Amino acid sequence: MLSIPFPLVRLVSALTLVGVAAAVAGCSSSGTSESMSLQENVDDSALKLEEAATVLETTAVPLRQILEGQATDLKKTFSAFSSGVDSFEDDTSDLHALATKRKAEAAEFRTRAEEKLSSIQNESMREDSRKRTQEVVEQLEDLGKEYGELLADMDEVTIGLKDVRTALSVDMSAAGIDAIRSPAKKVAGKMDDLHEELIKMAARHRKIAAGLSSKTPG
Image (cartoon, rainbow, N blue to C red):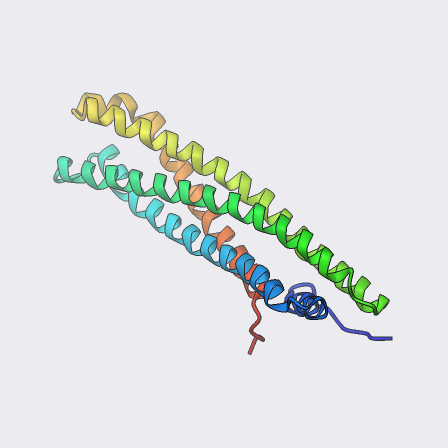
């Protein structure tokens, strides 16, 4: 009986078995490309999450300068803040798109993997492969749930930032800034919390992407 160890963090063994199943079915290249698509999506998401974290951090600087009366050139500082809001909104939109794409790819991966694994004649190998493929899918599903919650937080902060920008674009006098200072500071506080969430989620994506990689850790 074939016995193959499968450490939870290192998903590469599972994907290797999927590749074996595909080879038996006569279409191993297809199996490999499917797993690679998942890895690329997770990697792309990690990169975009890190980018969003950086944008959020840099956008908070001019916002606080305006709210705390530290902007030496108010017009220039507001412009920097406004550009940051646009960039963060773009990053949020991109992450939503990646989430939708990944969900579809994960579903397709699961369906095609089952079709290929069913052709394996060795019962032990077939069941072990199915078990590991299921673990891969479940891990991606868990990640998707956390990712969805994060995207909701990003949407909320984006709305808050746009509200602050609109209010400042109407009245950036001392009195105008004072009028929105309290709610704007709450938005700034949420930016700090979200920045930390983005960094953690990016690291989580990197870890999973490493598990999906065909490269053996050195």
